[in-house]
Image (tube, rainbow, N blue to C red; front, side, top):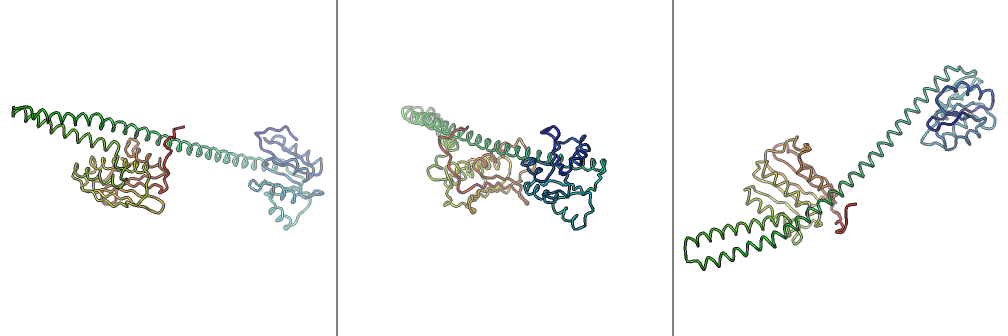
Length: 377
């Protein structure tokens, strides 16, 4: 047996005659492969157990175990990795025996005395096929590894998105609270003081100015209340997503003049986290409608669809351009997709055939509420 090199393919030669083995070894001497020699079928099985073979060159007629039987047993042990076999024979064999050989794994027959050049050429062909196969196997393994890495990366991205959204929502809650508790209360106190001052001032011109300032303060208070609600809609926690959408769309219609039609199932059980995601996607979508769509009415649907929840927004505007949908700088769309993915859902946006834009969010009905104390790892 030649010196073993792990990176080279293995060739098995089996013959019960020492001279024939020496001849085959001399023929294969210049071939880039490890050579495994055996004098019998039993020895061949023992020496090749657990070893991958690129080719087996086997004498047909051997005592104890014929070449056909050895071929069968070699390949029985390698159910997913069959070994190509070249049978050598010095005797004439019938068509029945030839057929038997091919059914047992033969890819060729050669008669003794063997033509060295032909045998070398055939060996090189099968080594090339084996090396090509190994290359495919390696590429498949690399693809699988890359797919696993990509999957892991996507999962990590989803966790990161969830973490960022959690931090962002916490910041919104903090800002909302400060607006309400500090600025809102301070403005209310200013309005009360203005009312007291107005009663104490006899000058009608000054009183009129105080009234104007009081109206301005009232408008600012309403703006603060609206910003507070948009930053963290408490109505979601108190009354649920349906009530929150109804409240927001009513205010949106008054502000923009766009009609909104709602088709929502109030009985769909949605967690607060999923509700907040739906709410944020609605906010982003309606903002885009107001800015870009030139729409006059919008339909919003929230319904159960099997084991999923469907949330859709469609408008009768000019429709979104295809390049905007695919653009890597459409951060609003990218953000909505990431929000959907973070809850195990899918997000899609498309231009409808006749006019307008359709936005669809589908997510699992059994969306599990994230652990409040979970952290990015």
